Image (cartoon, rainbow, N blue to C red):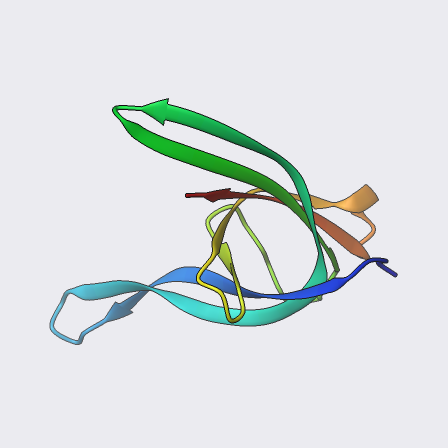
Length: 108
């Protein structure tokens, strides 16, 4: 069981769909809505080429779901808010298939 305020995120996967004419279109598709605990870790601010870049790091703790494979090629978004979180690491705690710790980065 995970303790803390629950947050619901939507998992997105980059998919390729054939158009029937030999080419394909690529887009982000929603895969699942997942509840867990989203924890802020740290922030980093940089200025380069007269542009400010803010990078926030988070951890998302969720219960393991059979049949749902989350990889670093996927992204999360927060429901109701235009925020995207890129997945940088997925850890199946002690390989027990009970708890996942997912490291996320949000860039603005």
